[in-house]
Image (cartoon, rainbow, N blue to C red; front, side, top):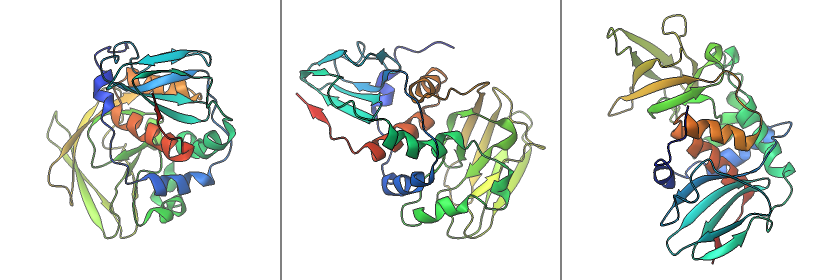
Length: 266
């Protein structure tokens, strides 16, 4: 698949940051680390957006020259850097250690769902998010959000709901034949295994979801990833190339929440 050069402006809108505190706490339980191959642009708006498209990789000694009203978000070894023009910025400045942010991101990225979601074994990670619930895993399908969704493991897809204070149901409609399959959450449970035996998770498959607490349905289009990269920048690049904007937003916001880097202004 090819990178759409007209897409960067669409990545400029940042999704809600309600989840920052919850995600930051949940990710502390992660183990291992996430590697970074190069710095990479993940969001770009303003007059210079075409010069710094989402997905562009840059070396540590690169310089970024921005005009007034420009804003570029770059994924780095230490987290993210938000550059605001006008001005010229060196990526060598502020390129700290990768250990802190990457370690906390490990479980968020590498835990690709499992049958344990049926029993709520991963619910301990969600318990910290009672006040401001947010999707704690890049590969959990948010029942409230539509669009393209990149699937790392079609055999272990998990559906996540933001509000798990009570019991709830969701209807999954197959657009082709109109068949409806319902899934149910018990009170206090945020996770439910996708009914893959009834609704196969295949590349290009589309389903419409309507939760009991949702006013409108959303359509989800699956994109199966054969070998999701382990490097953070390459993973972000794959999400961009495949149009999985919701997961890219979640990934970037999670890195931002853990880096604590203020915006660089010219």
